Image (tube, rainbow, N blue to C red; front, side, top):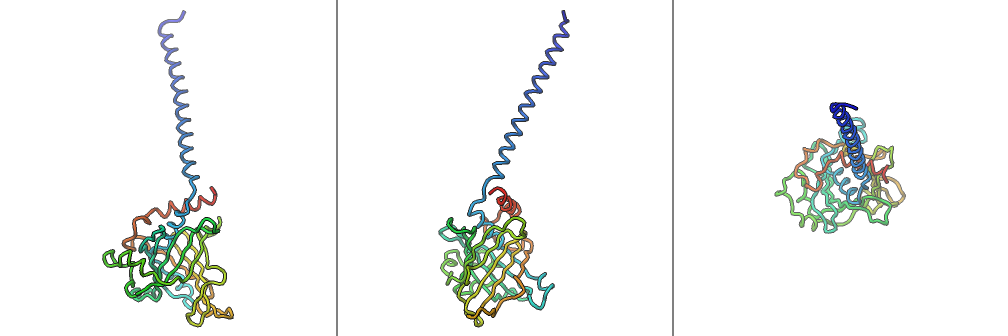
Length: 270
């Protein structure tokens, strides 16, 4: 017959084994629960509006073609491109103000536009619809993005100053393995354009990581001959640090890096 000390020792051992088993079950449960939460987050599909917000964020900011101009000065200028949120339409689409100027004279833009960014309709084979519009009273919008809010036209005035429609690009997520995140172009045949003897124009756009944007705009006459725009390839605009652009709208101030991961992840998940 064992002593009382042996009995206590056996009980302690049994309790220890019981606690170890319980602890193991708890750990397994926590791991499974955590794994389920992680899987749920990873498999959360990117919404149509996520794509539109991502494109708006990628286009926004100050970008330059400085590196490309240094590489090939005969065909490319150092151009400053700046875009920023300006207003919101009743359907939820974002209105962006866009301008381009030679880097040495940023106060004198040679191109000014409004963009509207929204998801493609469900029946279309694209993710984001990007449309450009002319601006009424362009002088009032020069260097719009460089101004503080109290120096800009009001959102309702901005919506009222959206003039004739110029072009629309339909952007799609790029296939896995490509450098770009989104790319798209105008429909076949482009859009009417009469500048410098053109009959129509085409536009292509690619959005890459780190807010890099490539644009290629060309004009053609009635015989299909190119009469304006670069022939060698698109302009390559690279972003400067995000804090150089003032007064960004808060809805678009989300983590670009985390959003890029979600966009890239959606290729696998969907």
